[in-house]
Structure formats: structure tokens, C-alpha cells
Image 1 (tube, rainbow, N blue to C red):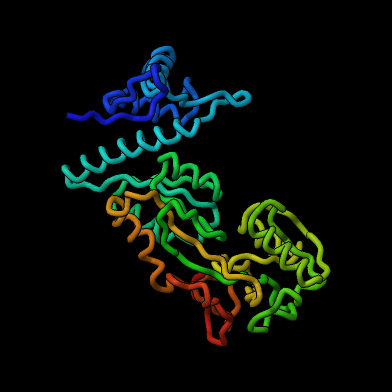
Image 2: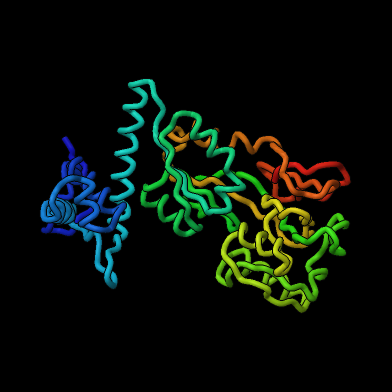
Length: 338
């Protein structure tokens, strides 16, 4: 009879599967979520010394360092991140099993950026919430969302711009043209599309320099060699279009973002389409199949009408295998939702 053995330092641990005691692993999972012994002990309703002992013994049994100090805080080691993902998976699978036995819906956690939550997957999140699942939503930028996914704190991450890492499973959610948001009396307002060169001399409301959208826009403007200036630097599409609507400057945003009242979104035809993906860890396809279907279901069709858009300007969201299709300005009444 063989015994499953986990990697361990010789002479320091047994590294056996039995070392993954459910209580200690669960305690470590809670600690990993908080990275604070005080908060984790309070959540578990045990004392801090007891929690310290549990985690110290678990690390010693496995022969690995699970966390370390970094400055004034604590961070997980790679082994700690793997164990945290295992702990969260085990807890989630237990929840799902109980839900199945009781005939109720399970739990699903989604991490996405502020803009994606509001304009890309809002309908999908509504469908997930209406399904009766215990839905938790975390707003996080790309790297933070992927870290939460790797650590097992969320089940699905929604990311945009750059493709997902090849080590994860993913599915395209939607793709959007980048649009120049201008007032109705602007020379671009009646055009079906503009180019980066047409932004020459523009005063633009832009994201901070480190944001992916800003980096891509900076490169495109520099490559074209057109002069422009920063009218405002703000974080968030909602603030970009809000400040534009106040007359601070014009702005370039993803086509899913509705312009302010009296303004028009005109596609910038030589800027790349921005694609969004849902991403999850391997081995969880079957477990997440229904949740992913709900998250994607509203993206299979154009839905709703965006208010406060000039008649004659329509932008369509493209879905699935979409990189070559862009939302366009059409000469039809009304505007469909981005």
C-alpha cells in the first residue's frame, strides 16, 4: 500500500496527505484571506496564539514556509499561495456539495475592475445574483484580480486589454472599439469615425500614466506624432466622461461607456479593439459551467438603450470571437447599449 507524499524538506516533516488536516487548512485559508492574525482569529472565534500554533504546526508538518514578513505586513510565499488556493477550493467545494444536497444554489466569487463591473458584465452579475447563488463581487485591477484567482479567493476574474496567462482557462466576454467622446457641436460629432491623427491639438482627459489604456493611447499618439495635451488625469471611465461633460476636455474611452448628455462617442478606427475575458483556474470547468454561462448569457445579444446619446449614433457591442469587428457609428435613430 502506498502513501501520497507532498514535497518536504528531508528530516523536517512527513509531508503526508494526512498533514493537510481540515481544521488547520481551513484556518490557514482564513488567515490567507486577511493576512492578519488578529482579523483571522476574530473570524475563526479563536485566540491569536491558537491560530499561530495551528499555522506553525501546519508549515512544519509540510516542511515549507507559508508566509513571511514584508515591511510592516505579511505576505504569502508561493507555497502559501498554493495552500491558500487549496483551502479556498476545499471550502468552496464543501459549500457546493451542501448546496447540491439541499437543492439550493452554490457560491461564486467574481473579481473585475470598476468599469468592467459597471459596463461589461453588469447584466451577467445581475443574472448570477438572480440565480440564487451566493455571489461575492470584488473590484480589482488586472493583477489584483489574477492574484485573487490564483489564491482561490475568487472563482472567476474578468480582465481586459492583454490576453490572459496561458496557465489559466479563459473565454472571450466582449470587445469594444475605442471612442473619442466629443460635444455635439464638435467637428468630429457627425463623422462615422476618426483616426489618431485627427486628435491633433486635443486637450484630453486621460487615465493615470500607469494604466493600460493610457499607455496604449500614449504609444499611438507618439507613433502618429500629433501634438496634444493632458486636460485632466483621473482614474476611472466614469470620471473621464464626467469631466469631459463638464467641458474640461474631450476623452477617449472604451465603446461600452455611454457619453454624457449632449455628447457623442465616435470610434477611433486605428486604435485597437479592447477585448475582455472571463478567466478561471484549470480543473474547475465543470464546477463553474453554470456560473460562466450566466455571466456570459447577456453578452450573446445587444441589450437595452443607452440614454443621453444623440440620435443617429449607434454603437454595437461585439461578442465571442470578435477581434476584427468594431462598433460603428450608423445613421439610424437611437443608440444600442455598449
